[in-house]
Image (tube, rainbow, N blue to C red; front, side, top):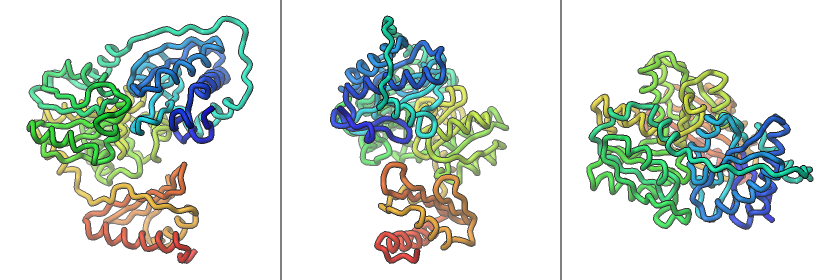
Length: 458
């Protein structure tokens, strides 16, 4: 049997198949998930289940479903789905859901993302620990008949929902390249773009969970090479790089230059604020300073958040935010049940450049104005002591502990966040220019290196 302790992460269930996650364990998780939901609401009658294209997803989901129906709960089975399609189903049907996917991880991984009705997240601190504990509990299974499995195709409804965020007719005469990396974007992208009066060329459209062309991880620049080449060779206006479960997207401008998640967040925020000038927009604390500046400049209300979808969705509900963006390429929309969707963000950017007659590179240059390190990881055991040493070093600057340690001055800022699952600390540093960035980075790395070797003053 798989390893429960290994696969329950901060936001989902994920591990190597079959060493860590297997069919028997998935049946147990299905039973635990249904039991957890019935604890919260005994009136629960159905749970939605979708799968990605990984070879193991179908078998794992079938066992998961056996666990659910054994408690007399029906399953609405979507079949092949992107993660944002599962969230849409949860929203329109008002039911909890689960999707089998390991997102951008390699082919030998699989996992499960869970949500309550209306796409409300289930993660660490919001129920995932209880699901895990129920996996180790002898759950009483009633003698009465099992629940039913009802097959439902929601692709057309999901497509209409996505298109409702823009006026498709305005996205005209554009040349678009999408790299779906043999992931679930190969199902969603053709369905959406057949309604867009522009030319679309899809790389690696075939659904193949062995990822024969390249990993479905657009955060890794190496995986963008084919898309960049195709954009340049075909003189395309934009490139779209989707991850394995198609809930994230990264954009490539017509020069072949990738946009950061922060720049895309700023563009989407500007578009939304042009229609709703007083809207609340959330950004996570490792987004570029330009995101907050853009929101303020457009008259919006900027709210800073911890990293992670469960924190952001909760904050969106509390603040009635219209939109939220993360530097990692997750974009959340109030009308999308506060769930993230890469393809909605891509359409909004496409509509913006079409209606304003600008090239994507011109927009990128407007917002890509700071020098950043990106995310740098350091292997550190004692996170708390390190953060105290660094806070003391920068004691004359503004600082907070919203999520790790953030220190900010007039010309630079950095955030150091401990990993939830590994002995790592993650650094994001941004400055007004490269020399200032390198100066602060050098100070931080000297402290971190001395601390790690036991020579630090702590």
